[in-house]
Length: 179
Image 1: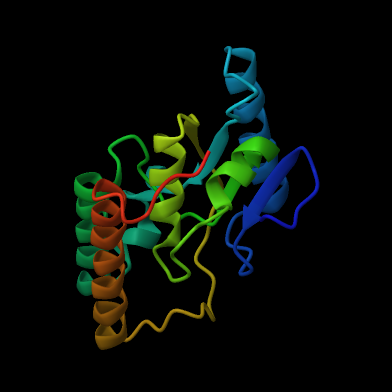
Image 2: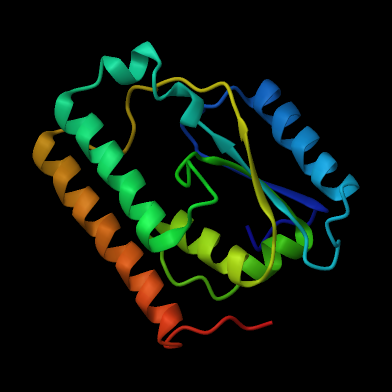
C-alpha cells in the first residue's frame, strides 16, 4: 500500500471474491460521502467493504459447523480486542485516502492473516474514520487458506494471538503510533 501513488488507494484480495466494478463503485461513493460530511482531509478516511450482510446468506449456511463456529468466535474476539465499530475487518476490499494509507500502513507490525485488525486499531488511534459498505462477494475456490478443520483451527488461534498481541503492544506502548 505504501508504494501506491494515487490520492485514493484500494486494497483488494487477489482471489477476486468481491465484484470489482460494483465493489469499487460502492466504496468510492461511501468515501466521497464521508468526505462531504466534513471528514478532515488531514487525517483522511477509509471505507471497508463488508460481507456482514451475508451472515444469513445461503453460502454461510452451507459452510461446515466448524467454519461457522470459527467465524462467530473470530467476530466475538474482534469486538473484544479490536473494535466494535467495524463488523467485517477481514473483507479484502478496502479504500483509503492517501493520507490515511501513509499514516496507517507505515510501521505496521503484523504480516500475517490478522494484519487487518492492526490496520483498524491504528486507524482508530489516529482518528481516521472508518466506514463500512456492503459489497457483492462470493466464495472463491483455491483460496490460499486451507479449509481442513485442523488448519482452520491453527490459523484461527494464530489470528487470536495476533489480535491479543496488537491490543497489548499498543496498550503497553511497546508499539507506538508515529504521527
